[in-house]
Length: 253
Image (cartoon, rainbow, N blue to C red):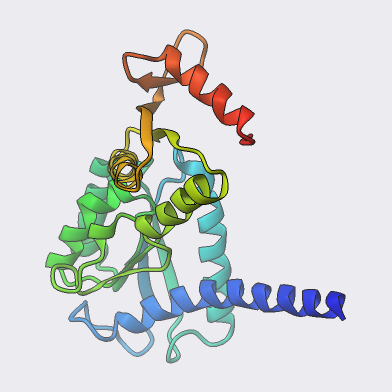
């Protein structure tokens, strides 16, 4: 009985993941008909721009996202496309650089004339590109978690298909304070727009809930120290090792 329920649950989860992938691509394609984007001829493919850090420090998760995008497009096109039109992906490698993401966004809007955009895939880039897409009334779906990136007034054509940063942070904070029962916290982020924003918000929330934040730092993954590790942007770097050792003793790995 338990095994049957487990298999049923696994089957449901697999379908859900597949539906999310197909639904995101299909929704973005359908959304392109609702905004004053370039006119689409009956036989013309629906061009969807894809802003992805395929190379650089942020490339690891992006490669996985790209596999999902390709899977969804192939599946939708094989089923006849969207209202009879095939989807065409226009990829630009942003390398995780907001400046490159802005340039690629402007190119897709003014030159390539895409009908919708998927991405960017990290909040540091999206903070720079979302206002540009809003001004162009360009439909956009992204997985970026910074709260301010979704605003029905400022960015009515932007849609997020992932939990917001506060939802993630609430779960982490609850686990630390109510499950592990720890009161002293170290918060470490990277130096991207997302990392700085998320770390700051996490520190504020932990303090509000009564925790003591004993260490806060940001790591620049593009700069290595003399040991070949990412450079920690904090004058009290020796405390990082102690914080990591303390977290290991508390059960983290």
